[in-house]
Length: 307
Image (cartoon, rainbow, N blue to C red; front, side, top):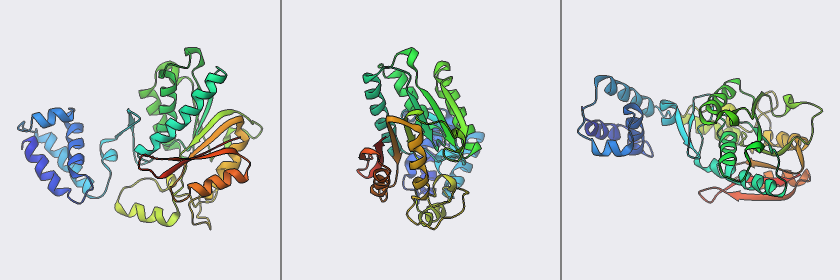
């Protein structure tokens, strides 16, 4: 079977996917170890029996609803290649806006007072936010080499932290990697009861999807961890009485306030449906200069406040 023959057949099989041609091309690039240009200009090349077998199995898995990123084990985010698996959410393009907004604030703070900035990435998952933020800040050109920011990566899932560590090891330079600390914690529980005013910024993409919507989302076979989606949970992980996806955020914001320095920022990703409610929670807790930000599709996505 040639590349073109497989491509045509697989696109037909994946007709229910929102992007069948893209799915097939990504699988071909992954199995062949070639870029899309190679695939387009070598359509008559014969696939090996092993390549055919892997591709056929991958198409079958995709037909169950399993995302391409979980099949290949990789997802690009902020121009970087992240390892992903079913213990972490697949990085989404709209979350890149969270990195950009956090970076803008930190560069402004550094311009006012050059020093080692301190960052907390709460609910880090694959580590895509914290790792991308650190790498960008180190390579943007403003921050001096002796001022590499210190980043604390936090998650309730040990498996997610293991994935984040692997991504830090593969993406960051040795000097950058040495500035990262990984903490297994339920929100801020294990960051120290007496520590306060630690971070210049706390950035987080926490679970914020309402429980009922989470259940519906997971019916399509995407296999993303409910733990990283459902925002309607109590501290012990049991279902809460809320239905707006904000139960966890209602705990996160007051806890975060203790750990942000005066003048520091808390910035969160939320759903377009509960961003304004998140801003009101920040205001009620006396965060000042609260702000709403839009994602790549023009939907409300980030909320920030200054302590």
